[in-house]
Length: 358
Ligand code: UDP
Image (cartoon, rainbow, N blue to C red; front, side):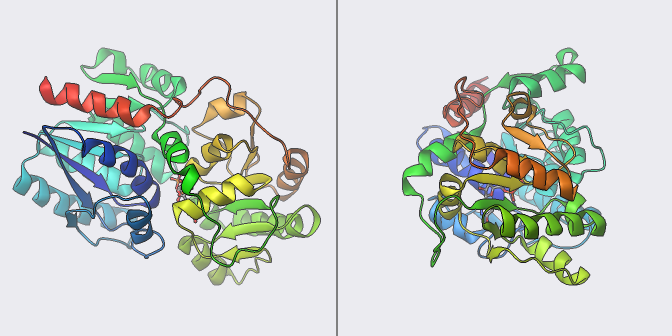
């Protein structure tokens, strides 16, 4: 029997793993052992996703969170290495670009265990982003690079992957599978009373939360938009909550606790615009037919910018307000199945099966 260890730790990884893990369970001859590093640990950042998305509980939980990047990644490396030595998998599956992804890839690579990377080849070309470092190193160590888009394939080609003995394959974006699969189960957050047409916002990238000037400017823009355009609904990420508190800033919008995925897709479906610095939420805006204003200086999802449905505005208060006024209420269409049309998890399972029989 072929045995895989899959490594998750952060909110978007639980959503991606839900689609793949649930499919793998129906495949004879492949055994998956799920490891949760503990990177996200609040009930509404972790448990809720396992409950809502019918994912089996991770067999192994390392409960590692907090600390600086080096400390967190180092502690994960130590524990994941022990797990891999004990369970001797034939392969390891890692997702996205977090410290859990990097630690999983490093531990596997040192033990000569082949790695498959879901969401391979994405680049922001900003090496100061912790996620960019994690992606570059993970891709370089991986054996099967499961790319979501043509641009991600192109990025790997530019980095010389054509000359390496690795399998680089476009499979699509598993987040679209999740959006399509769970759309019919979407549910309003408990007690939510606003009419459709609100603006849905999320802010959590370190480049915004850890830079007082950027965070202050974004908050001024959000407060203004809430008054002048439409109510802004913002599920507040714990990191942003702490940063705002530390700086004594006042966020005068409709704040809610982080929500589960089913509530989040309800909000996406009912909003009039998305305003975010999240990677995943930029695409989910598109899946639910909404324009997106992105609070970053660049994006990995360049095809949405090229299509004119994602406006990259950074943290400039004036630019944010102008873009929101321009894009609010726009309806956008996915005509070319840019992200695989919901077949990505099956494509990935097919790749894993080929791999396991090679
Ligand atoms: N998300 C959620 N609840 C929230 C905020 C986000 O379920 O309160 C989901 C969102 O729909 C997306 C994923 O979490 O599927 C994105 O995670 P996040 O923005 O934390 O990470 P990123 O995509 O930027 O890595």
